[in-house]
Image 1 (spheres, rainbow, N blue to C red):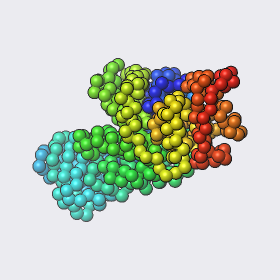
Image 2: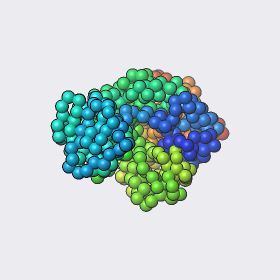
Image 3: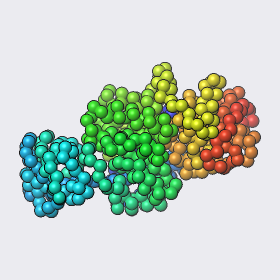
Image 4: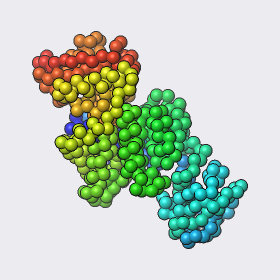
Length: 478
């Protein structure tokens, strides 16, 4: 099975889609990666979900990526007398360390690290920004605020702190347990929520030890201020627009999205655009025109993947949501303006042998109008670097590692295939042409670019480009 688009689709599994039949239908509709949301999935059911996806993978004979999304720290206020209170504009309201039930004038803040980090002038958002408080003064164990946006505040509502960097790790104890369970289950990607600093990502990578790649979810203003540092250490990033839109003015989010996508492309790291992309399809079989434009914008920007959350996890039309997103991406990529837009965002190749080879393969493919670039890769880095160039050719990634093949299912324009490693240069060229024909990307008489590293099986040693002709012998073997 091959896709007729280069942009990949992530589909979140949930009550509407977490059985083998639905997973298979979602894959057929266009899902390339399945997201397991650890905020809602009990870790004891994780292996069962992974096994379902692997069964679908075996059925269709195509590598499928699995992403486990860690919940991250959830900051909440305490409980109230009568379960809530009404706040009015301009009144004083205190967040403190007192564990007694809250009133209209104060509430317990069960996170001492927040109370020790708040400063006068900082904003405190409650309940996804429905209430906004401004810190007036801070003393030991208490922060007095002024209510700027009023309303009802109730038990254990979430707290967001757009101005405050708090000394709390992005991983909670639950996340650590979930991370170990996900790695044991064999997921391919780990998504880390509420990243504030590069050290957050480093902590997860230290635990993962290469067993899965790590994706930083960018949803806090603090992460945006250190974007380059986080991008450098992460294996991929996600534009998590939901929480970004809570912690900063909504009108800033589109610009931040473009900045993240362009930065990711410069670094050659996969970037996923997520949250509310086809939100209305939770209850409607068709999206709004604005949602179609939103998905199209991410595709025009050259994002590696676009993601569905509740649309595929708990919505009424999960298959329609995936197929709609797939059709939008296909249509955009066929637009005559698509390539000129995508190419304007290409970055200069880095001063490495791998990047020079990747850029050369792109130029050769353009000059000769070739359909296929075949990348022999052990770690996946060769395919990552070629995809960074956004070539107008399909990138077939040939790898002996099933883990690498699965991880590459997330990457723009890459069609991963697991196969035994090449014996020599002639074997490498022959089998690259054979797979190009078998998968329907090339025909007899076409030329295929082969990119590889010598000696074979050496990760990160991309140093060779070769052009091969597809012959009848390749077609017969295919």
